[in-house]
Every structure is written in structure tokens, then in C-alpha cells.
Image (cartoon, rainbow, N blue to C red):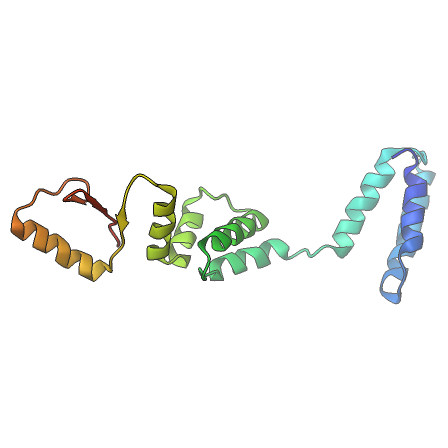
Length: 165
């Protein structure tokens, strides 16, 4: 910005209302103090300081904590794509890395396993994925073992089966 002082004064002139009047006056006083310290009207530090004070005054200071709480309460709905997008957004806002063990545990508790498997199967066009109830699957495994069929990597008779926990 070529003239930070002018930009700040212009921005303050557009702010109106009883809730911001005192804050505006405080900003003008701070700018006067900065000028008394020898900071020039063209110095970028004026703008940087103003923006920092603006954010501190008007941004939600608890957003990170709120995002973390919302992340912990998040449960998967109809759309898995929407769920993942919301999960990643909240993790970013909460400041938690997606590859963190706690974040992964939170994801595991929030997701419906069968829909995740269907979503993964959709990405893998080369393999057929049969998703079954875990109780039913245990019965299938016992039947296959009883028949003496060989079990390798979850493949029975050429059909890939998802293992649910």
C-alpha cells in the first residue's frame, strides 16, 4: 500500500455504529502515538499493526477451540464426500494435522465403516467389493473354512470381500 495512513483513515471512516466508535477513537490515538515515535505515514508497519489490532478486536478468538469441539462431535451423514470435506476443514481450523494419531482416531469414531468401504470400492474399478455385515461375514468365513477352500488375502472363489471390524 502506497499510503497506509490514508488507507487506515479511509477504512475507519466507513466503520459506523456505537459498538465500534470507541475502537475507532482508540485506533486514531494509536496512529498518533506511532507518528509521535517517528513512524512515517508511508511506512507499511502502520497498516500491519492496524490489521493485527483489527483482527484481535473483531475475529472470533475462540474459533480454533470451537472447531476442535465441532470436529470431535462430527458424525458421518448421507454423503461421505461431504463428511470428508467438513472433517478436513474442521481439522485445519482446529490446527490439528490430519496424520496425527488422535485425528485418525477421531475420524474412525465418526465414520460409518460400510459406507467408507463402498466409497473406497468406487475408487477401485478393477475389483468387486462385497460389503457384508460383520456377523454375517464371520459366518461366511467359517463356511468357507469348513468347505476346505483356501483363504488368501480375503479372496474366496475370485471375489474380494471387505473385512469389517
